[in-house]
Length: 151
Image (cartoon, rainbow, N blue to C red; front, top):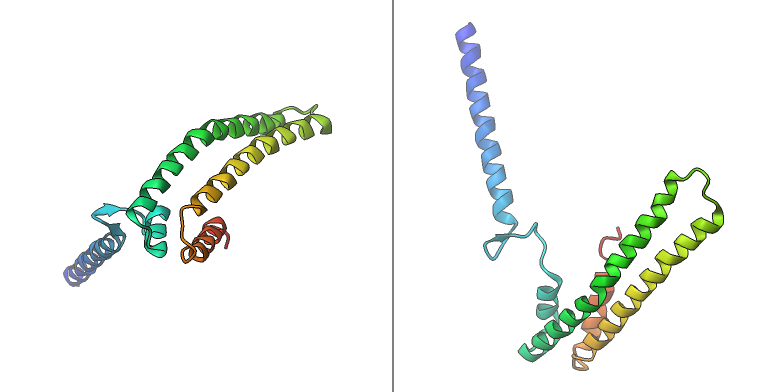
């Protein structure tokens, strides 16, 4: 009796182990892109190239604009982070008053506004790369990118 129960449990464990290995294999195989793990997502640039049917020159010009944009916004990312750190550090101060909170809030908002303005200008410059036929697709693409993650 004990021998048959042990045998059934052993067979069950082996079957479950094989099923798990197979499942992991198919999950990993399904989420690979160009031989590399990408979490099942494509890069926005690759999606934009495909959807807008960008020419080689448009791709080159876009990459140049993108590099220039990130060179300009990187310091602002640091400024926003520093401003937010200072703002949320106020949590520790039991004597903090509304005027201090508002001053730190304005600092965060000012840095974020600068970042948003540079990003807006960047998208406007990028928009200038496209033909009249591509513009509606670009506008739609930007709207989708801005709304991603909002569910």
